[in-house]
Length: 485
Image (cartoon, rainbow, N blue to C red; front, side, top):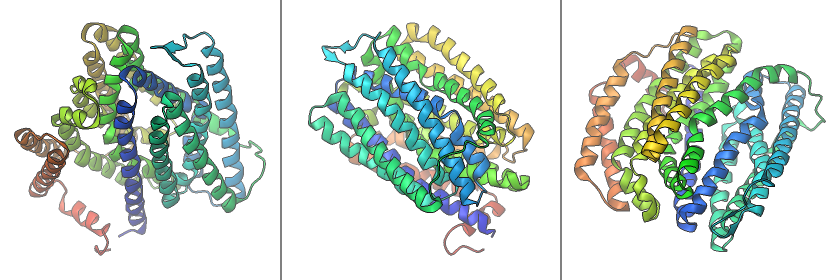
């Protein structure tokens, strides 16, 4: 068994553990926030967080991905040091400019809601943007060079600390200011720890910005990608807020957040996959790139399809457990967003091939088309069907994006997947969903036990119907401790 495959599997495993912790903390934030503040303030927080999601990639200018693409195989510490601090300093400057722009815009916004002053809240949001950007750029260094233990510790500690601080600030009655301050403090500690480790390994020097033009040429289209992705995945909150009420934004966002637990499966794979195939692509090893990509598709199908079915069946119960009664009315959003997230995961694997080829403008075109579909459908459906219309628009636009991106990527590097894995995992998932529907659990313990039972049923069926071929099964066994090498 090739040691590279073993190393890759180990890194995915380490990252998965970290993402379980991170996703668990993100999941924990839902009941903490929905029980700690009312739906109106939660809706305002959702809009703030959505704005941060948009502004952060704009400030990074795609330099995070460019750094990974061009440095995953670099070993010269002098070169690495200069390229990192050039990237870090550039994103610091762009984030400060965006933060100042946000502060200027705040002067023209109504800064009261339900007798609650939002002046300090928006000022803290601008500062939070800077810390979010620098934290992302700093921890990205460790994923670029496959230092997954350090990456996992930093991201896990950052997530845990945020939740601890959230509990403390909300208990102290700080409301939204406390929520934002919690993120700023945890980001700051993550940045300081990451920079200390980077300087310890590579030393420090003032950046020369040499080669930054090539990074920007690769990365700026990705800034467009992230903007369009924001329009695709987050603009619906603004549509709901415009046509409806902030409380509806809160209800929609709570359900959306629960469905997004599927990112637990997607994130570890992407964090390790892109640096790995970038290094292989630079060596001209397209056969290995094809192998990694094909296995990534099958891995996602194996795990996300049943998770999407399970979340759909248990949507109401999960909202009852994790939120207050006001949020349960949005249960029908979870199935729509869960399957939209499934399509996003497949899109993410496919778009890496486009990035390898340097055709980032293609991703802009594909996302632009999907965003246009999403916005148009939201304008038509939200006034007529409310948050249900927003959920339908999300599902359809992600489906179209997934299909278009996968078809185009397959023209660049042929993927060996076939229809059989899709049919097999779907059939097993439908049976598992029927079991959960029949049990119809209520309460934390019954729901947890039902999830365990459904998982067991699913994997027994997967084993019986031979989801993996004999060759694939041998390959996967070789990645396990004690497996044949």
